[in-house]
Length: 555
Image (tube, rainbow, N blue to C red; front, side, top):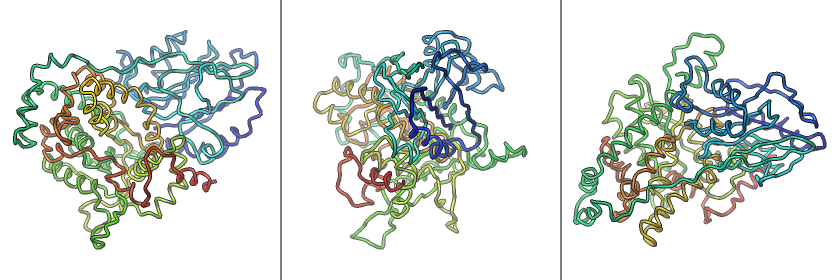
């Protein structure tokens, strides 16, 4: 939950535009990501580019090191992960050694590192691109620039005045200085690959044929568990570890209490410190049920559920916010309360009217979504921004008092659909090309996941000073799922709501979420009804004119 900004200009550059951006909105955008503290440093790189910073190496780090270790070496008690990483980077001499250290970090990160003995900068993101990092470089190998801007988040000024790109997570990059600035690719990530064990070796491959004979969803999942109990149990164990590491990696203070602690007060924080973006769907409900198992019993958990007005012409008197995600959210809440009645589940109903959507898109959200620009980016980005703001009304609160979640950690279900074939396009690929085609599609999904939306999501959530954390994209979870044969994770011979992500559905069923276990996949833009709020007929892949106009109007 930090921000990074680096501005490099050569002696021959006269780029007042970049300097103006840094002096205006970008600082404010970064401070919202990390509201507790900030600092700046200015360094002069002469044309001869001899080493000039006597303090040595500089690390701008926006990341989390989970499981308290890097490459098997545990972080000493009392030392921050960034200080430990800086020391490890200082102890090596070559670019290759720097890359090797970065590649064994378990957790999301983006970084800029100045290495004194090389007088060069290394920059990049983790292989899944879970944290945002933008620059004004098209990322062609050997690109030569007169000035370079690297930032975690874009402001209205930078989004409007310049062309920013996501730094590709497929490589790490080296920046050299002289009369010009040269950007070079230095490290290429290995492609994601899943177990392609021949289907013929699947001992129980014919089980589906018998399971579809007039049997209920519960019976089918039970039969699957009889066959794949070991795989489901393995997923549960590794997901529990992933969630535990992500929710415990914090100072156990909420957003409200952190400033009090920093001012010297002795704070006993009793507020919510963990929230979940919660639609009541399969992915978020499993996260909630597993979080309940590893989070202290006396701690509350906030469930953030967003809705936009439902246009119900047949029944105008109905509740305009009874959208699909609100109804499934309340259904899943009932199941969670049955699992643990003593837990304080704060189900926050976040209701967004059209006028507020239009205003916040223009003043903030459009810039955060940039450089993403499609209709789909707009719908998802806006829905996530309001959900992550956490401002609504608690279900069951007698006075309908307003509530703002104080949680600093927000769990998201990103990555589950890509790895376990949760999208409609997976079913289409399977129908057209069978198991080999499905394997190819899943591998492609994971190899391009860093290019699609994770950087956008990070900018959106971190704008509220919250740290988004993605348990399904933990390196060890990804590795575990990749090792499993495809048919143990998904079987698209079964109907929608059963065969897709069947391993996760079985886990939900086993955890005590039987109704949630068979809920069909529903994307946030449809479940929250934001896609219908402005009553437009458009394709998700089209460039969104609302974003373009918002950036222009925001100036």
